[in-house]
Image 1: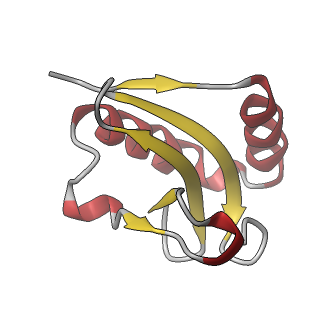
Image 2: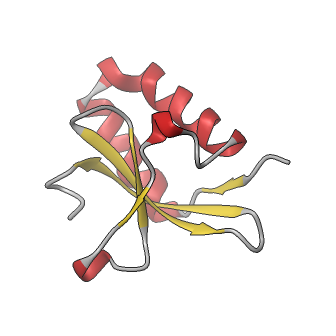
Length: 91
């Protein structure tokens, strides 16, 4: 059963701004979201838990430079997208 991606307004604003600055990864970004819906544990996503001030959140990679920070709610099979950007930007 696929997961449901939830896009809070704050994430939508960040994603639009990010994708305007980086139009070259738009298709990669879409593929990552599709894969995330189907199987958030797919090895290509490189899903991992975050630590420090982002403890309790997880991250998936768009590519080696950019990632999406998310809240993964397994019980409800919902994935809440939190932030998008380079590894330094979303720390």
